[in-house]
Image (cartoon, rainbow, N blue to C red):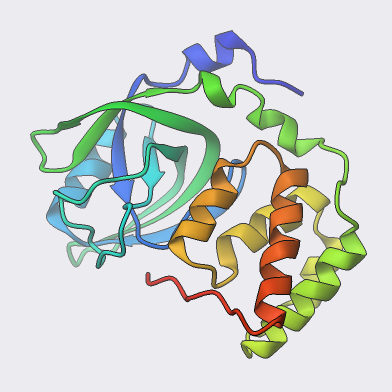
Amino acid sequence: MTMGHNQISSLPSQIALFPLSGVVLMPFAHIPLNVFEERYINLVDDSFANGHYIGIVQPQVDAPDPVPGDVALYKTGTIARIISFFDASDGTYQITLQGVMRFRVISEQLADGGYRTAMVDYMPYVDDLALMTESEGTSREQLISLMHNFLEEKDIEVNWEAVNEASYSALVSSLVMTCPFSSVEKQALLELGDQAQRAEMLIQLFNMSGDGQATSSSRH
């Protein structure tokens, strides 16, 4: 299944950017966010007039959250749609985002609300919807076995029933997003062409960790 040009044309060409350190969002995956800073409250408010869309992107260097406005951002991120919204009545919002597809930043601007926006190009990632039906690449059993050893070493608990029930594509996306890789490694995984390539890189990262070359943890 491939996203058509008509579907891409329905996405906004200019989107608000929500930078997050150590966080990538894969197409079709979900992340919850607690929004508290004024500029990002403004961003969420303004997104309701723009199809509820915002862009998730990482800073190019380790940075605290909220990410300072003068920090350079990676050029590849993921446009996401707000699928749930809760006003906590204490000046914060709790939202859930669903990834739609990746984008390439063309240029950045500063919005009146104090947050960054960007003109973006979706065409480099026109095949993102194909991830839903992509055939398996690296052996699922091998991937899960190495994942088990990697997470056990780091004393991270996992719902193995959910892992076993997940589709191959969902499993790969979940590993990209949740494993404690460095920001650079997560960005590299995000920018790869398809899930089979990501699975191969995950295998390499798991093996590197097993050889004592553990990756650094991302800050949230």
